[in-house]
Image 1 (cartoon, one colour):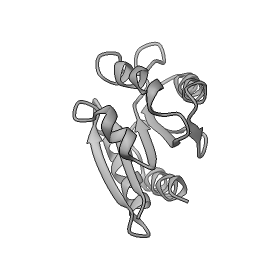
Image 2 (image 1 turned 45 degrees about the horizontal axis):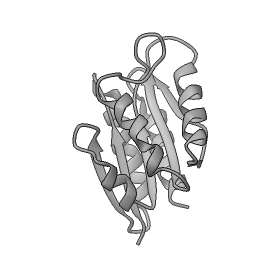
Image 3 (image 1 turned 45 degrees about the vertical axis):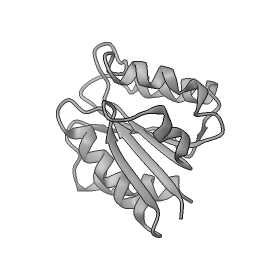
Image 4 (image 1 turned 180 degrees about the vertical axis):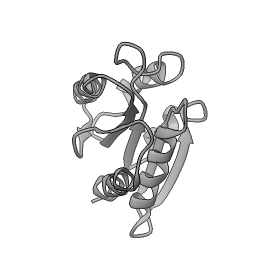
Length: 141
């Protein structure tokens, strides 16, 4: 059984909805999946996991949420190397630059991205939630 941790920050609930659908996809095949908001997550959660999904919406000038998610992501340098990682988040405006920056950063930290970061505009619809579930399944393949 594979261990998966899905860690997210959500201000409006949109990224949380995405996280829950990613959990559904990752659970297929009987994997042990832990869903945590970033304020509950520790480096140990990431260290113990075989697979990691991280979610955060675009904030301000297309950056990660700066109070909780940004410091947590920064702290991952020491534990994310070699891990299979999926990134996801919602946005209101812009062109997804925050996700491109986040992908590059994770690769620079030594993570192995399983797919391009999944970005959805505002509240996920059924198709968006399906994409999230598929990303969760892809993470554990």
